[in-house]
Image (cartoon, rainbow, N blue to C red):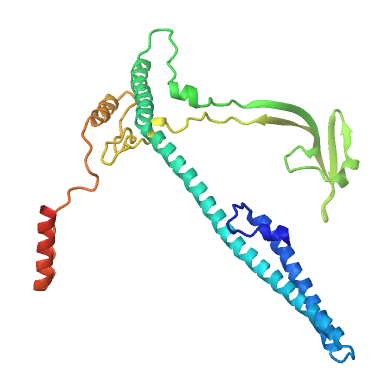
Length: 324
């Protein structure tokens, strides 16, 4: 009982956890159950003692009944106080958990903001890589159209780094198998029932085919072989979508021009089309433009509402006070 009483908050500075209090409540409720049982026994004993010739027996039984009632009352109030304590501690623990979650989210938000502020520089670095690749592609396409004698064509850097070459057909295994007996005139395979009747003469083989209503016909047959080849088939090379097509790099602030937003409607005729370079230069020029509000201009609007003389006077007085 004393240990449970020590867990109840009063003027003492206690720090019970909800888990500890739940365990204490289980013990307190067991005490209540036991006290209820003892009170029932005491009441039955007291009622029996009322017919005892000795009055002292009734007095003693009544004293025991009173003691058991006090014991039950104390057990009940203790369990009630512990449940109230648990509710308070659970509320504090929930608040502490919310505070921890909020602080963690705040830190993540600050970290994300700091990272986003680094985005423009990183995005411009990526765009510079794309533009360098585009300028190289235009120069390579022009040079490969008319290369020097004996020179190999220049490989496109992105194809070389991100692509895969074509695979040729590769023979894995070849073997010759016996294909059995076949009719030499191409009518198909010799039936199993006729194979034992095959005749061989002067290096050639024949079989007599008997058909109802006709005389037996002598037909040439031959032993055939077949070549079984296991191979890996040819497959085309792989060229992924170019980074200049796949990458999108919007501006960070509202109204800022995209750092890179792909080619849009631009459709060049050849890989060395000089308009590639003109497009890239126009994008670089857009970076120097002042950002504009993407929502467009905001025009003035009017609305009319009716006021009583008192309301109008109050508004005029408020406006006068704010202008002081």
